[in-house]
Length: 294
Image 1 (cartoon, rainbow, N blue to C red):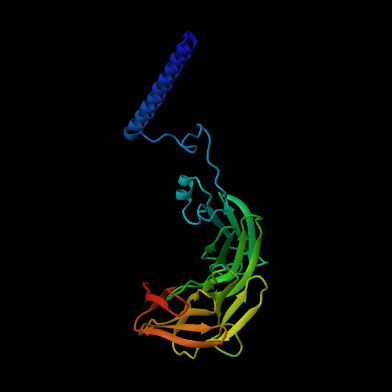
Image 2: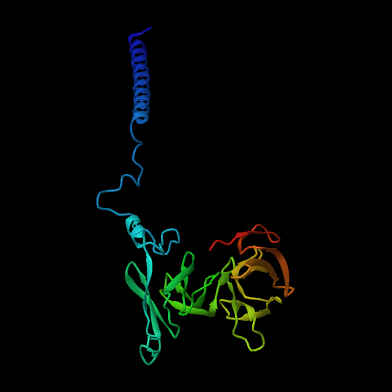
């Protein structure tokens, strides 16, 4: 074997040894990293490695972030909060006179303490305003009218409004006339009970298309006594509406009815010798209910 071949073989052996040693060192380092991570905190993710002074941006119109009840809780979490400021100009003073001549109350909607919209109403909102429902880009709120008190089994609302979180536009949806209200799953329809009719003291169930403003009216079942209607819930397929008729305060008892929107007929689904509350639809034919606790 000549000298040149011997040198090439030796160089190859040295290179192979270097590769083996390098792989061994790399593996040893990885093992040490793993051992260290078992005893220490995980390596920072991109969010954990955020620079001091930087804050994570949260969208205002995220329904999981938007707080509608507790200002202090929202502030501590660094998320937007919604509140109302009410100017009771339509209310009646103790002397029986309106606060001003136009008789309009102003309800201001605030986000993070800043006014973003306002509405005027001839209803005295002594109970303030309340958010009824919220989704990704809208808030539905209503005025709680004056003169509501005593034996009240369901929420009572006057004007129903929607507020668009993207455009800051307010739209009046319906005059609920002191009724409870229910929304369909896709929020295209609302249902409420109104007493203001000329042909029946019991009134009607009204189903309104929010977009087209079309209203369909349904006579309520033949019921007698001192009762209140509310707790409206659409079925999953939105072809039926369940609601409660509760009686009291003497001899309290309750009934649950189902309105079939296609057949325009009612079915007495359940009754009990206590005040009732609908919890949910289990499917398109079965309802889960419980005792209403005052």
